[in-house]
Image (cartoon, rainbow, N blue to C red; front, side, top):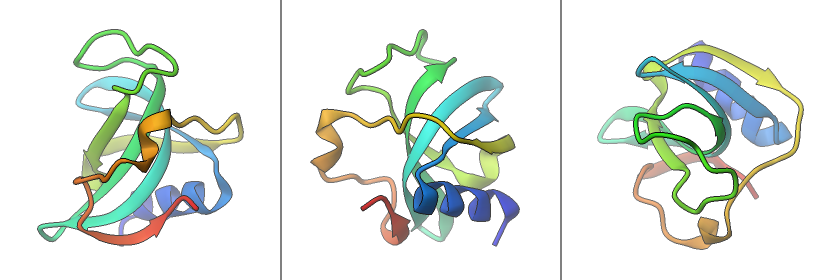
Length: 104
């Protein structure tokens, strides 16, 4: 398992925020599920701040869910802070087929 994978798993267990870069954009996120889909490690995040290819990130928006391949993240760091999610978290996700860990 990659170090990114272990960092994300810890963030889920301890409800810590993650900062990272993905596709050149700085992102502040809370991971909600981690596992794999089609053999590739992926994570479902709620992005609450930073940048996105879709434009500005509006805090609290139900459209801030991100499905990101673990190996696509760089400069991944943990930090304490408020846990962010959205009211539509209970909807079925399609990002991860085999879930190794998820937020309770």
